[in-house]
Image 1 (cartoon, rainbow, N blue to C red):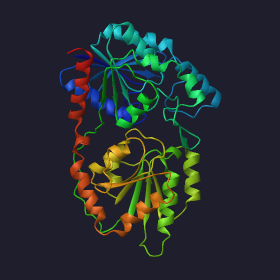
Image 2 (cartoon, one colour; image 1 turned 90 degrees about the horizontal axis):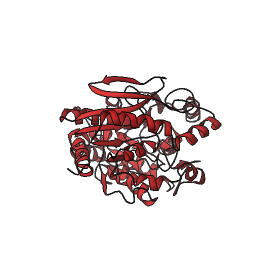
Image 3 (cartoon, helix red, strand yellow; image 1 turned 180 degrees about the vertical axis):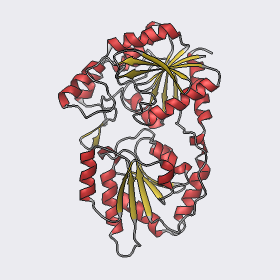
Image 4 (cartoon, rainbow, N blue to C red; image 1 turned 135 degrees about the vertical axis):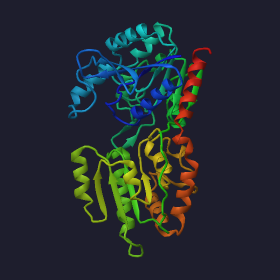
Length: 400
């Protein structure tokens, strides 16, 4: 089968977990004997065609006012103009359509389309190529891809999002299939009227190749908690810091530590460092997962936005580290409350602090949850499963 994968970025340009998953998917499809090509964007003024780890990649110049990866954050007016062009970027639609004509794929698998816009959908539709949209975030509902604004989740797209996404529901019905990386992200789109007439709808959880975690020596109770990921407001880092400080201040508990790994807006991170300055809290910056997980007892994923399927959750489980996770997005689809971790409601005052305290005060709980986490998380290390499930969707939409 000839498969064309379309995504806003591709290695070595990586914006997040979607690019990591896409690279593994491309390699896995090709290893099964399929012909694979990736189409992505570039800051160059010319088309770039080359191979990355044996996969054919075509990089198209982005026809917008700036490239959407790296560099300083743009001003509000520039961002608005960028998103206005991205509502339907006909030039990018023509460019990706030309690649489709040359490659002649059996299936076109769309991933994050920022930069391409849904003009890419229309290119496939005009050429009668069955298209499948993989939902990694909320781009098709919200230009910021988060459905999160001013510290709050949006139950429905706001007025400005509605303007930039006018007609998107009807356009989505040009596709033959839709895949959500979690049930949460798929259902959010269906509730808002997208993909209503799309015949093939599936949930396929991501995975990540994993060589196995070293044996762990679990403490009787938790002493060191950890956060790894983008240090940003929507990730709930401030709520975690507040909750940790309230528990760590208790005189009846042993000395606790919180390790924060990852990067974010420098001004925001510096503000957190200053506000929560303590010898119990350490900001580590970018750090490899293997090095990070060996230093903590419990991983905390305190997202306040509806994080579709944060890889840090299944990564923690694979390393045998129990997780305290917010009941948001796809997080509850990975953690079984009271089995391999704890779930809490972010809007409930004191809920996160109570979960942290439970892991500190209950002997044996860290080992109990950690062992179950490591034993039950194998599907998140099985990239072969992901490839097989995507191929089943391709077969379905191609009529095979």
